[in-house]
Length: 84
Image 1: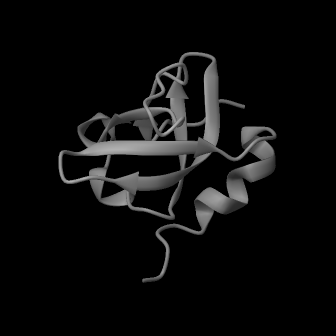
Image 2: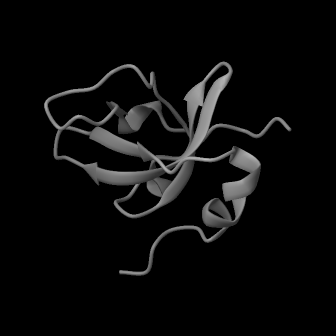
């Protein structure tokens, strides 16, 4: 099942946090990229549901793959933005 990606990330990019990172401007809709949100992330065939861990003041986004298949985790993405 093909699903649209919310944010482009190369899962092999990790910084000193040990987490993959990208920039918020790589998102289709940057307003969806907030800490605690679940999004569809990746590129090509390496796509996963991920939790947005943080977004810093420079627009760097850290993501955590939640595991399992995208299909098994779509319910998390459908929850939308976390409630503050």
